[in-house]
Length: 125
View 1 (cartoon, rainbow, N blue to C red):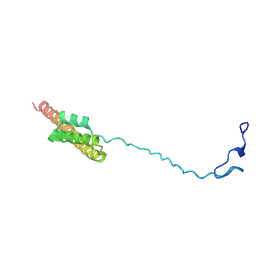
View 2: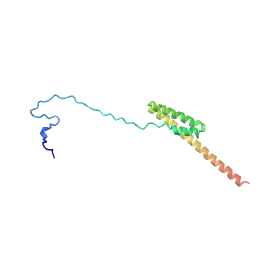
View 3: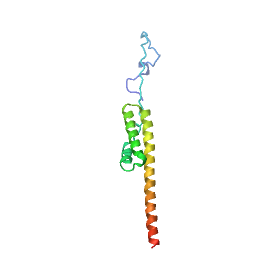
View 4: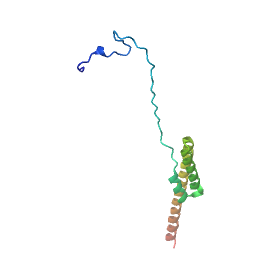
């Protein structure tokens, strides 16, 4: 349904000329571009995990090494070198995993050793 006073002839389509109106020269076409910046999640530096590994479970100084790599990852992130930050963060994560696993294994071996030692004392008087 057309609004009152609307006529299809009153609004020329693109490329059509109305009768009786002289042709106007073509104006320069303006092209507008839209730039979309897609930001991915910044790389993780695992600094809290590295601090815990350094303070609480630090076998073979792996917690210290993880902490150093975490600081390097944070420095690279501040310098906008995301690939370098990703590399250092991955190294810190691997060192943290290794440190945590060694600590858990050491605790489990200690608990098992204590249980076996106490168990032998009770059996043999």
